[in-house]
Image (cartoon, rainbow, N blue to C red; front, top):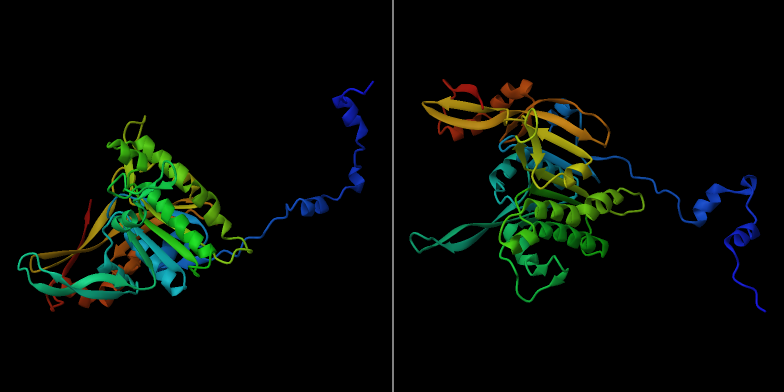
Length: 376
């Protein structure tokens, strides 16, 4: 008669436990491939001296996910443009994702972003004549606006992860941005794009999710879910893991996040990120510009002969979250056409760029120019 199945207690009693004195934990980790890979040294994309003077941070950290947020016209785009310039100076390819569709090439040039204007013949809508004008820009960057995203990825069904013969929508969606980032990271890994990449997205909160578009109505819950599902692996794995010493390229992700004021909570109004909090939780560095209940900025104004020119803003700036080096300073900073300026050095800026200010005021006479600030 055959022996029946072994009992659990019989199996456990048949094993001879290893004495802790004879066990080598380090060897076990090596055998199980559990050894840790060291991160590369911390490096930064340096911004203007003013940014360091006020926040005590050199700029935007490489290999991390950073968010700059705030109300409109608080200087977020100036930080974005300074980051693009710093990328170019460091040989890191900036991937500009402009879903707000108002990228200012003139402002970028004043900041120091390098690019070439591409001219071509177009038909004047009023006269019907051909005119030669700027039709594109080229340089050391990749540029995606909403139209480009839709043209490249509009045929993708993000619900089922497959390509369609005919698009089911007519505009770009949240998932297209994530698909674009993943697509470029794969091309980098495959050797088709031999550069470190810095993804610069302006801005979170401008697109609807694929599910919202198909439903024909906007749905905040659909959109928040899309940010969570589409970007989770990017912000929690692909970007931070690129800091490991075994990785050839260190990649960075920077977002401008739109905000809204939630007045439905008990007590004072609370500022919320558009698109939900998923990306805010994942960000290692969050910088808030402006106030909480209001933009909290002062417009910088030059007046001459009854003509006003608003050449910038002075705004609050606060390091709201910092899991990079834990510094959380705050103060005020000026955002002007040529970059960020310490308010204590604003007079110096006006002297250095008087010619530019005079051109905007359409005069060559420096006398009787009145400089003032208007608080919003």
